[in-house]
Length: 196
Image (cartoon, rainbow, N blue to C red; front, side, top):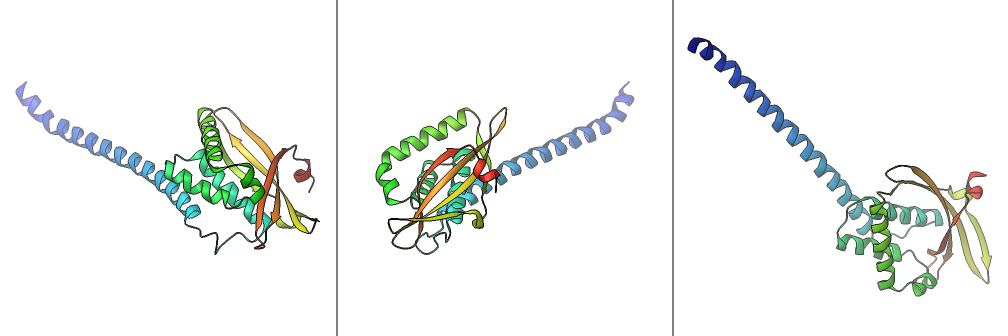
């Protein structure tokens, strides 16, 4: 009996060591995936917040709306810190027209934003994609010597059960520095975008 145990000892030890190596490999693999996700989140936030909008402001109405949509995707999907939220919100507000800023003081805007993000997280909702209509589909108008642009978007919003589509139309106004600023946006039925 002792001889038999002696012969089995070596294969048992090798099997245990092999299991330990495989377990450690699985642990490392999963740990790296989580770090990669965090790095992606941090790099997305850094990409937005490191942009100097005074020197590198988006040049077209479409580019302004695309930049704003990129900020929104981070807000609702990523786990961000309070400082990151503040930086993203400051960049979003830099895209807003003075009239929109006057109607939304900073503290109220931040409170509303935090509540909206919390609501999205509770529903496990996030924006998976935003399609901004092509620049040649952007409508331009002049009213009282001010230039306006109208940009249609299509947001895909995922929650824990469904994928839904939300259409929004952004109205932008050119400021004294010739920057297109978001004046307001509204939810639409999407016919304007789908017909083009």
